[in-house]
Structure formats: structure tokens, C-alpha cells
Image (cartoon, rainbow, N blue to C red; front, side, top):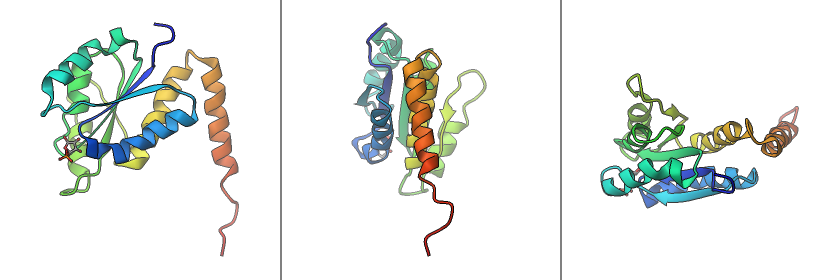
Length: 162
Ligand code: RP5
């Protein structure tokens, strides 16, 4: 669907935005449009079903799903869409995100969720991975991604400041 927003960023709670905003900012830096939504697997299950079943028809190509604690959102979404789902474990208060990580990464064989690191690093990398997927069929985005990485390389000093 030409012109449709390619990336959906979904998260289980408003409280996840402090993490997921880093995915949004990274996509912004790469010129990739995204739609950001709160979709809770346990508080808004009907919203989850409607989103996941309709995501492809809406024109999305990649879904980034962030959640914390008993983080069902990425796996449940992946179960109901053929789109690639990238899971971001949000750092939880009780277990520092290890609960989020394990509940997202340990998908049984058959329904994959591409699981990133806990917290900001995972959110940034989910956006970069989403961009890399889209860049396979978007040469202009591939160039922007290459430039983003070159700028990152150029920003690393050879010696530490003492
Ligand atoms: C999960 O519970 C959310 O993804 C969030 O990370 C966590 C806590 O949510 P709140 O209690 O802050 O709304 O569903």
C-alpha cells in the first residue's frame, strides 16, 4: 500500500513511552513515518486483536512492540499478524526488565518475535532494525541508514578525553 505509514510502534502502557520514544526518535531521524499507539494485551485485549488482525491491511510493514513485566504484547501481536514483530522489553520496577526480556524472547517455535535489548538500547535498535527491513525495498532509506551509521562512526573519538 504505497504511501501508508510503514511502522507501527505499540506499547502496553503510557508508562512505556519513556522507553519507546527512543524508537520514535530514531525513526524520525531516519525519515521513517510511524504510528504510535497504546495497546495493552491484558487491559485492552479487544484493541490488541483489532490492531494485530488489521495491521497489514492498514499498510504497516513492521510492528515494534514494547512491554514490561509479564509482557504478552509482542507475542500475542505476532500470533495475529504476518508482519515482522520486533519486541522491546521495557525495564520493569520489580525485576529490572529481566521478566520483560524472558517473556518476550522465549517464544515457542512457530511464531517469532525479534527480541531486542532491555530499555532504551532495545528501542533504538528496534527502530534501526525496522529501518533496515524497509531499506531492502527502499533505496533512499538505505542511503539514509548508511549515512546515519557513518555519522555514528565519525562521532567516536579515537582517544578518551582525560
Ligand atoms: C505492562 O505493564 C506495560 O507494558 C508496562 O510496562 C507495565 C506497567 O504498566 P503500568 O502499570 O505503568 O501502566 O502492561
